[in-house]
Image 1 (tube, rainbow, N blue to C red):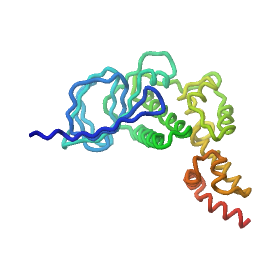
Image 2: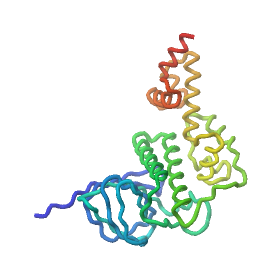
Image 3: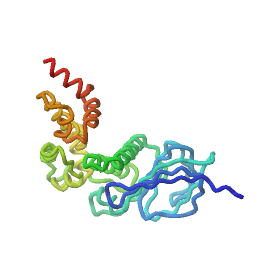
Image 4: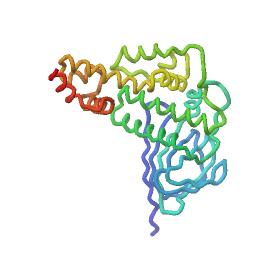
Length: 276
């Protein structure tokens, strides 16, 4: 009796309609098929040989793989019994929304990419989606959206037939966005809401906010929460209450952000304040 090939697949949702992902460890030989979505993935282990509408290609661990909507392709292991890869799939409407204009439909130019910056950004998106699934908080959603927009922006800029608008545009007062973040530390807005406030695309907001303030909106909000908590602790608030009052999910979340940004824990800061 023939043993079926190893095939383990997880499919996961996202904070947005029209975006989903997979994590696959498989020895299967996929026949010719197509998706109605864009696909971007990272081959994490092993290697794969495939034929696509852009030619026959081989991909190895660390390579990025792409598919366009309607593009017929297949896939099989190369040089070993199996391979492991993660993918994120986006409806064409999602990509059009990130591109931010009504121009022609985007097409990725190559089926296999070697791009260290894009790989790192995609890995961060996967990590943030994992965190969102564990705790679907507003702040995690904003972090996911930032990573998604950054991934798509890098793809559009360097590996597609079109590029997103990123230069000067009317409006775009970043102070309004900073004030919105500071005014409500407990409720992180969507990146799309911030974009609508100033009449820019999400990609333009992400780039312009970071250029103005040094970090993207998600990181700025975390820093603002940490500074709020630091002030409350200095004034005698206990650690648990300071965490909640500053918009953190709990004290352990505050501790992680403190250590990352300040280099010391809230407890160490509390002891230092008591010595003063």
